[in-house]
Structure formats: C-alpha cells, structure tokens
Length: 287
Image (cartoon, rainbow, N blue to C red):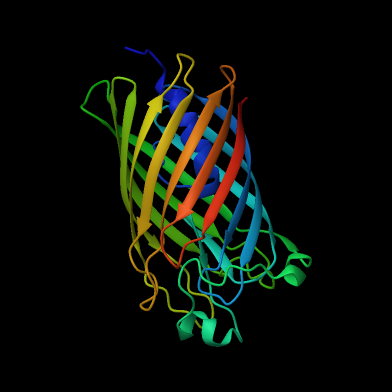
C-alpha cells in the first residue's frame, strides 16, 4: 500500500480552492504555520448573454493553521472583456447587465455553448480591476485516526471590496456555511460536501440563496504526495428561469518538495449558468 501524508493531498485542495474555494477539508493535520499561494485562472463562456465572455483572474492568498483550525483569505485581480459577473463560492456566475436586451438575465438569455463567437473589439478593451476579498474558516470536528472519517465545518464570507463600477461583483456581502467529509481507502481519497450560501442581491436581481453539494475522488500517484482529483460541484437553482450552476473539475498536483507544490486544473461547466471552461495553475509555499 502506498504510504503518503494526507497533508500533501490537502495542499492540492488549497490550490484548487484558491480558484474555486469550498470543501475546506484542505487542512494540514497537526501542522501549524503560514502558507502563501497564488494562482492564475482563465474562464470563458457565453453564459446567458449575447456575446462570449472571457475573464482572467490572478489570485493571491494566505492561510494560517493552528491545530484543527484554519483561516484562509484571498483576493483576485480580474481582467474581463465584458461586465456582469461575480464569484460566489466555487462558481463564477452572471449578475445580469443593464440594456442586455433579449439575452439579459431577466429576459431569457442563451443556452450554454450558444453564440460562442468572441467579440474581438471587446477583447481588445479589457477592464482590469481588484476583485472581492474572500475569507474562509475551517474547523476539524472529527479525524480519521480516531473515527471512520474526517469531518470539517466551514464558515465563509465575501467582502464587497471590488469597485462598484467594475461590475465584477454584486457590491454585497455573501455568507456561507458547509460541512465536508473525507475518507481514505488505500491510496484513494473520497470527498463529499454540503452547504448553503446567502448571496447578496445586486440591483435589479433577486437571487435565490442556494444549497451547494459536491463529491470527489482523489488518488495519490507518488510516495511524495503528488495526486490527482476529480470533483463534481453544483448549486441548487439561483434564478427561476435558469439551470443551476454546476461543473466538474480534474486536477493534477505535483509536490516539488516538503514546502512547495504546483497544481494544474481544468473545469467544465454543465449548465447555461456556468462557464464553458476554466483552466488554472497555481503554486503553494509553506513559510
């Protein structure tokens, strides 16, 4: 049986969650200290709009862990060719746009994958702005050494630090709470989560506050802790006339040494309210 430390696999979750934060089972068991992380994400899709949308996000994050408690905060710099998006939990979702016409949020919109021709003029006119600040906590209630699984409770909050004129956020606070479980079987790890998000409503949009759920399967692929992870994640419906956001991801974690790891992750949206694709790469440093 392959002997690998759990904290190596949890590094991977931290890197993935710097671009799709959730499932805060990303804890280093018995490890105390600070960790810096950064990642770059590219996201594209038609969503519910009449034109193709590209977002480029550069994240900077810092985490502190002490025994069973972890705090993790991050903020992105965002470049976008079109306005009208926010990040909530693991998802980048539309906020709606004024004067969007028949493709606007409140008027029906496009189905996922339609009208994917990029607007070259708008691509040349990228808007760059600072995004919202996200703070996540995680507390380990049970550990697999003494029980049949690891169990975590995870509160989180989004602060509306993005400029009101940037339309990269809602201008409102978001609040969330989730529970995560983790179980190891040989070199495999099974992950599952369930939660709830209170989304702040931007002007003219009345979001339903969604329940969230996800399930994943990971595997260690080397003795030093390198791993792969497949993960499915979904919300319940946010807007009545649209499918709920949902996506799958596949990632590779390469452990370079005891303090540094690289991650490469691809995401595929599964509904009209999700991006067509996202790709990200990140690096994590223990201090």
